[in-house]
Structures are given as structure tokens and as C-alpha cells.
Length: 81
Image (cartoon, rainbow, N blue to C red):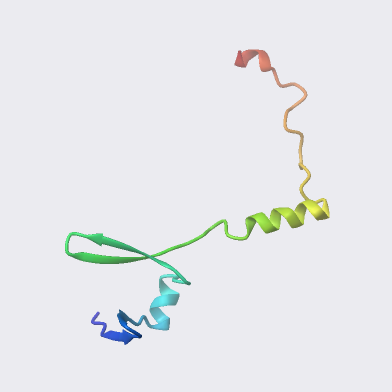
């Protein structure tokens, strides 16, 4: 695929089509990887973005309680010594 280099202020860049952005799940940031003779653009993801706020909200609502005990009644800890 050929892509034209365009002027962006005092710099130059490329424009990616909406189709490419959607197909490769590119949101706001890409990782630029320089390899032997190649430039690779890789979508940058933040899979845990917003978790901190969600955990705080869960705590305020009391939704952060364990669903089951963290150990079983018949669990034998002696075997781990």
C-alpha cells in the first residue's frame, strides 16, 4: 500500500484511513519499531486503563468482597512446609 507523506505544521507525517484504524484497533497511540530497513507501527494498548477508578468505585459500593473464602476448611497447610 502506498501512503503519501503530508505536511503537518513544521513536520511531516502519514495519514491512516478510518478503515486501517478500525481494522488494526489503533486508538490514540502507536508504538514505532525500527527494524533493519523497516518502520513498523504497532497499536499501543492499555488493557488495564481505568481499573484503579473502577476498584475505588467498587470499594465505595461495597462490591469488593470475596465471593468465597480464601482457604478451604479441609485444607492441610502442613504439606507445604
